Length: 319
Image (cartoon, rainbow, N blue to C red; front, side):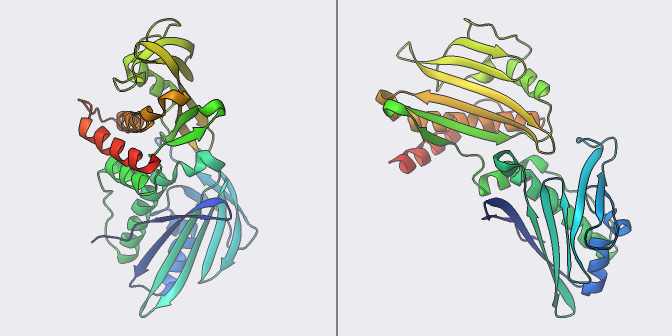
């Protein structure tokens, strides 16, 4: 059965994921499943320790084998109104479960307000898929069925990233007609050292030499490396007509409670504005390949049709 997809909205400046699920169970039964730590243990992504009252502290923990820190952080119960509303903070985020009677069953409206500023917003794709899986487990728990985790995690997250527009780049205006192509992509909980290894292929970047192949592509011919700080930064010149035209800067960053991300900047002089659609398309394709690689999928050869499709999209957008 096809379940409703999450919706991403911005409310009060914060990104908010919204989910709706209808259950053939009374609100009282679903309330226990979304508020009792003993029931949460069957479907919620972390162990929850708290008390049934507003203002109660909340502790979260993950099993040792989880790809995140075992100490899941802390929170506070914001609302506790059985059998209607259960809301609490989880580190920088706010989770809110609201139940509405619906015939013989009920409607669950679940919202996840994502904290952490701009880096936090980048996680909406993986968060949406993660909650889809958790809510499916909740549905099976309520029905007494055995839950089987679905496959296809990479494709599901990619679909949400595209749905929310988190895979796209932007053009930032600069002085004297110059501009900067900028991308930021969430890479989950992959350590920056692992991402660096994937990009370098084990090759140590050297100032004055060409960058390792993982950092470059044929659409943006690379020049010499100007800065390298393993495992966080690589900068090099890009060439047009064989001469340096601007810089490409890769940054690998990790934010506690949020995860790892890559930020890429590509400067373009005023006289080469016609190259912007190609640069945007090439770097979006490049980062899609990297995203797949950090999740264990190698995509080769380069998907030229994908880049051509994106180039047409960006050309139409830029006019």
